[in-house]
Length: 273
Image (cartoon, rainbow, N blue to C red):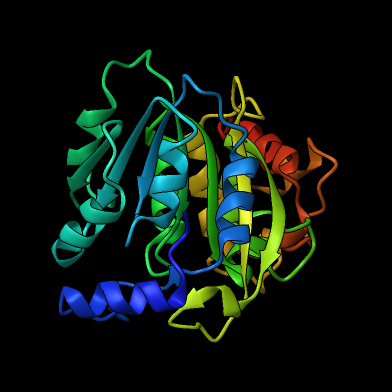
């Protein structure tokens, strides 16, 4: 059962707590939103789920009713007691850890074990955390999460748009991603000033393009660091006119005009110099 706004206020009051703006805490108080997130995750009873930023435990409790094991990673020590009270189930394991560090990942077990991540991610760490997990944690195969709508748009943006950038390309390299639904501010306490969205990512069996990832994303970061410049200027230290001539990519293009496949092509020719 999802905690209502009244229940959240009561729980916080009993534990002498208030939501932390510094930690990006906005608690979901709408059962339909929790149910939608669980459905979007497409979980099976035998699955193991990691939840980052469980807060007061409404989503944790819903997940525990669906799967074999829930690992709830909470950074705020003040929330551990109310979280344990709400998500009191034998298949829930609560870990006090900062999810942006790697220590908690020992709890994921052997490399062949597979996990799903389902979370209402703290807004202040969402993008770097997601990109780090995509790069370094193959045990997590699917990721279903809620973030600010603006952040969600950046992760799945079409090529050529203002929102298209490094996060978009990193997501496309590792997985298929889509926005499942938009979420209004009214489903949270406290109510944020912006809308949110639920996003689902499913890791690809292999990266979407064949290019050395370090070289590929070094090139991408260099170009997007000078986003307004044409590629022939921003990448002058890496690509010559002859390199561009080996591709169908115009040296006068700007970085947001290139697909992931285009970037992979440039990375390959750049490595041949």
